[in-house]
Amino acid sequence: MVRTYVLATVILTFLFAACHPEKPKPVARSFDRYLYPEDLQGVVPAGVKGDDSIQLARAYIEQWLQQQALLHHAQRNVNMNTEHLEKQVEAYKNGLIVYEYEQGLVSQKLDTVVTDEEIKAYYDSRQELFVLKQPILKTSYIRLKPDAPEQERVKRWFLSEDLKERDLLEKYCSMYASQYALYDTTWHYVDELVNKIPLSKISEDDYRQIGRIFEIIENNELYLIILHDSKFRDSRSPLSLVQRSIRNLILNKRKIDLIDQMQKSIVADARDKNNIEIYN
Image (cartoon, rainbow, N blue to C red; front, top):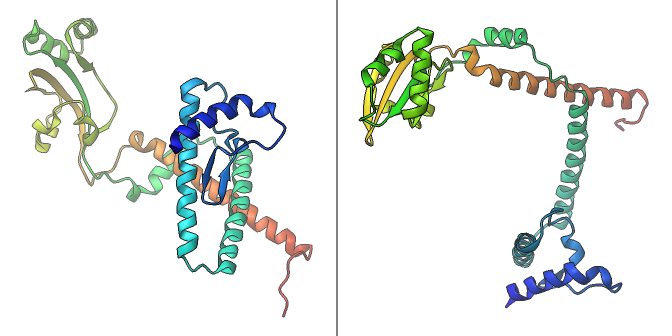
């Protein structure tokens, strides 16, 4: 079997290939193409040994066999314009070289410091970009067994602003709650919250009932839920929710500008030195 041969060969070549000066035997063949032990260098990361290293090598060999078989079939069945193919390969190679240069330039010269003032200015100047497509909520919740003790007292603590009662609630939740998030001031998308709490049992119209405790039993568990704030679809997204996205947008704009300036500078310098020209 090919796999048995491959596995045995991989083990032997990894152990003994360095001891033989002659060209080692191939570890796999696909039609008239061969894969040699040196082709496997770097396939298995340093420190990976035993069965894990064999599995990685085997996976690479299987992928190589599949790719070569498909390539052989394609070459026999596609009427390829060789000149056109070579031009495509050359264009791809040139594009890859330029891309690598641009990425190196960006990593060296891109200013990655984005201030809060810049983020706020971007947010204020592009309000149309930050419109909610679904409601968002600030919410806290406690997940309990329906027979958990002191439930009425827990509800009172949950609504309280008193620091001592909040501390009592924290201790209670650590003992009896299977999951909880108290006094959360972070905005969350509804789609995110439904994975944690049975929010579908609360209608969207009820999102306006700020400060009320919703009591929901689902899957034999009691959920106590308080909505602290809400915003609806088509309203403006809070800055805190989109701050990270704005930072990425600013950095992406800087990156584009940096590359554009580099390209223009290189071309202008080449023109000034008569290194590029158009012949009539």
